[in-house]
Amino acid sequence: MVKYICKRILYMIFVFFVMSLVLFFLYNLIPGDPARAQLEPIKDTLTPEEYQFRYAQARKQLGLDDPTIIRYGKWMKGVLKGDFGMSSVYKQPVKGVVTVPLRNTVFINIFVIALVLLITIPLGIRTAVRKHSGFDKTIQVLTVVGYSIPIFIIALLFIFIFAVKLQWFPVSGMTTPNFKGTEFEHFLDTMYHLALPIIILVVTSLAGVTRYVRAAMIDALSMDYIKTARAKGLKEKVVIYSHAWKNALLPVITLIIAWIMSVFSGSLVIERMFNLHGMGNFYINALNNQDYNVALAIQLFYIIIALLSNLVTDISYGFVDPRVRIDQ
Image 1: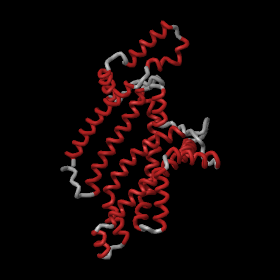
Image 2: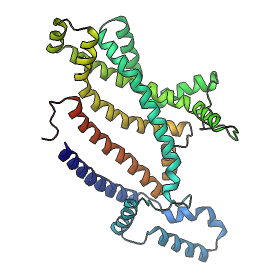
Image 3: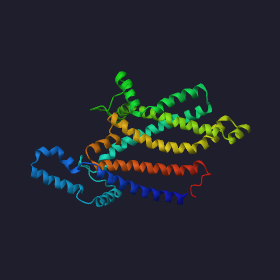
Image 4: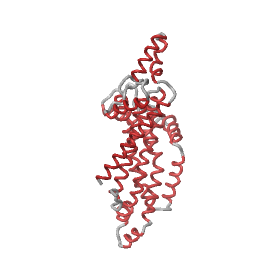
């Protein structure tokens, strides 16, 4: 186990460096000049000579005059020390700029993941046990409809119904402007603003996970060892949860890890639509403003999430099914 984990970590490090190199070169191929974008707000206040002088200073500060591979080496050296460079828009270290959006995105997605798993696992098991019943058919119809509609369509529908027509939730933002109150009241106000985005992310995730859990459980319940367990007179709950569910976990884990990545990517759309101060909205603004240090830092965050998810998936196999010898 330890040997395997060490190999996987080395592989993750290799992939991380390759992906970071590819991303760095791709960002440098994007049309535009970060130095000019940085000076754009004050361009009209400068004489041509002053502009050229400030432009040369900005390029030197951003390291744009060095060859791309040299710039990558300097940038990666800083990344390994926790220094992602300076934001050309906020004039602050990137690490400080992305802290709040990162915290907001992680909070929203962890909340969504917990709610979805609490709903879909029991629901998927229940529909598999009651296969072809009225309850199962109803859930199947709802999940097919939910799975086929894009997230932004569902988001627009929910905004129209619950925010515009019924006015139960605010349309955008994370807090009420100029809100005053205790820390707990601030938390409640934030949760009130996040309620509709979280509901949308949960609803759009229910269909796929429920259907996959149901399919895995149906396969497990059709196995011969389940018939043997029932023939021995074991209670149905023991057969379902101790035997069938344990063996259905292996394919479900793979889906859940991949789904977690889709939740993070889906939140990019929702954060933009609701103007939430999260990584998605921040990332799009960084691209629009050519703030590439911020954009690269956010991309690295998602790469790390993907690599860690794959590692957790592989390790989980050994714990869920002892027959899977991950050290071989």
